[in-house]
Length: 365
Image 1 (tube, rainbow, N blue to C red):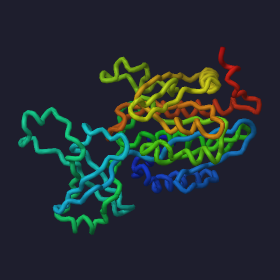
Image 2: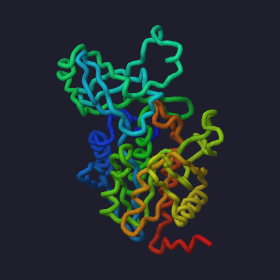
Image 3: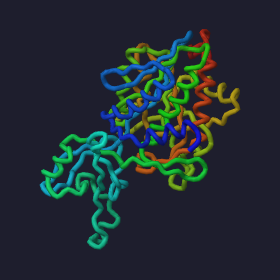
Image 4: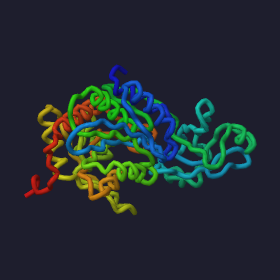
C-alpha cells in the first residue's frame, strides 16, 4: 500500500469502533491530525472537529467514524453470548462470521458467530435465514464465569473481526470501509488545508453514531451553523449482477454525487441536494478533469438528512466513493476513487469564495 489515503484507510479499518464506542478511532484520527499540526477538539458525544479559518461561506465537511455491529445481550451459563444488532446488520450475512468482542485495547476477545453444523441441518433449514435472536457468539469459554473473567459483560460492543484484504487493482476489502474510507479522504483534505493560503472557513468533522440513529453529527451542526454541508460516505456501486438495473455507478469510475436519497423503511428522511452544491460539484469536476458519477437511490440514508435542517437550513450534498457489498464483513472500494474524491473536494473548496451564492434562484429556472 503506497498512497497515504490507502495507508490511513488500512490503519483505521483495523481499529474497532462500534457506533457509540468510537473513542479508539477518534484517538487514532486525532494522532494523525496532530502530526499535521491541525488543531482539533471533541464534543461530549465524541465528535472530532478540526477547523481551518477562512473567508466566505462556512463549510462543514464530514464523515462518520463509527461502524455497525452488535451488543452483548445475554451470557449463557455455558459461556455463549447472545446479542442485539446495532445498525443495519444483515441477518443473512451473520452465521460463521469472525467477530471481535471489544473489551479494550490489548484485551479484545475474538469470537465466531455460530453456524449450525451442516450434517445436522434439515432440508428446510438449508434455505432459511436464521433470525439473529437465534444466533450466538462462541468465544471459546465454557462458563459464564470464564466470560466474566475475560471482561465481557452485558452491553459489551462486538464488531466484525477487523481485517484488510488487498485485492487486485488498488481495491481494498474488509469491514468498516463504510466509512473509514470517508475518514481517510478527510485526512487527505486536512493535509491540503494545513498548507493553503486562502479559502472558505472549513470544519472537518469525524462524526459519531451515524449507524445507530443518524443524529450524532447534529450537535456539531447546531453549534457551527455552517452555510454548506458536504457529507462523505459510500455510494452504492451497481456494477455487479445482483445490483444490475439499480443505477450506473461503477467501482473505479470516480467519485459520485447523490441526486436523491430516501430511506423509505420507517425513517422518512433523505436528501435532495441544494442546486448550488450540484452546480459547484459539476463545475469543480470539469475544471479538474475528474470523472463524476451520479446516483439516485431509495433505501440508503446518511446523517446529512438531519444536518441539513440545522439553523435556518444548510446548503447540502452527499458525495462519496463507489462501494460494493455494503454492511457486510467484506465491503470493497477502489483507492483511485478515494484519491479522485479528495482532489474533487479540494477543487470545490477553491471555488467557494466570499461572493459564492447560495441563492436557489441563481441556479434554478
